[in-house]
Image (cartoon, rainbow, N blue to C red; front, side, top):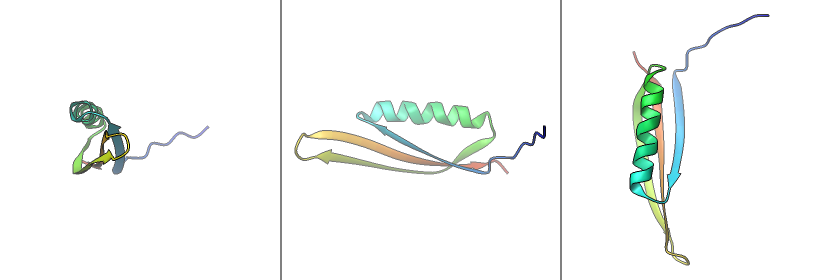
Length: 69
């Protein structure tokens, strides 16, 4: 059996929540987890939309992590 390790250089994670505080907490936890595998935040993109029929607010975010150099 052969075992090999590859270094993760790029990682993109998606988040969605109904509350801004919840999504911030989710992202913060993921940053701490990825810091343990030597990834840092490269870029964050976020959006909020409201469904006009139900007035449902949805917050979404995309976080791009890159390996520390």
